[in-house]
Length: 474
Image (tube, rainbow, N blue to C red):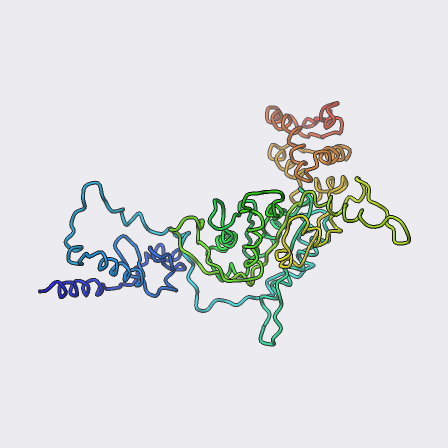
């Protein structure tokens, strides 16, 4: 038999490999039946490559990759008969155990069902219902809560709308601007608990231009896909919150390449407007050994938030530039006047801060959060369902001790928090500092029945009032 006939015979043996359906363990049928296999070489799912070839050790390879392997053998001069006769490897070389190369289930792509249920607008609460639930956890910020409620409701009306009449509703992505500790991230986290839709919270500080160390832009959608349990159809109706968006502003007075500033804004344009992107499933895009999924961001609502430091100085400078003489004159703002200058922000102010016009044009809804005052901080301590005071009361209640705060003590805590200029984040740090000794000493004495925090204790001029079981407070 000639070499050509021998090669054709071996190639026929390889291509006549019987493709058997994958046997599913009955105990794992419920867990794995909703996921489709991925080609081990090109990482494409079975729905895109066609039937996969089952290999020893649970590996699966598509016909395209198998053909490329055959072609590479021919180009290298090897014959299939030589490969079949290889029973041992040279010293120092060994194949990886195939059983150790299986794709974890969390990195598999959820199988698309033929009869996927359509999106039902009735499952999404109305704007007033969303705001009412937000009021239970977030104090103040009435306009921000109203804007988020309307934006979320209108977004899902857009998803459910019928475009056959020629009217297509455009996306209304949201930009939240507020000082640190004003509740931007807490608003979105609370919203995630209220809605039965996947929500991902990403941080813009780790995003870099493609090809540099850091997270690629597609990692934002990859987190949403993970929150949707790798269900592409469910992820395409989700919400993405990009925090610290002000950190990707254009860098000023720099001679180096801006790989984490303006370039990131430019790459985010396609996601915000709506496009089809390839995202890694269950891993970072830097790792090439993960499957890829195609996600359409057209129906994904993007909410961006940032503190935008020094933006108030830009607004104050713009206002003070106006004429102060004549009939059209306006009073100049003093340094300490106008606590909520952010409410007067314009697109020109944001462009001067470092945001490019194309990026701002894809965030048509701009919401500003108010600076927290002393009254707001006192209400944050006690009113929300998850208030800080209620958390510490629950901790001491587990030791059968009743914890109370005098109104003057709450006001003093709010004043100390204002001095730190970190918003509501300072409240827990302050309470933790003077509650440390109390939580340490109370478990020692089982006769303690109540503790009352006084203003003198906060001011370090006295101690808390201790009440023993069956006795009055001392």
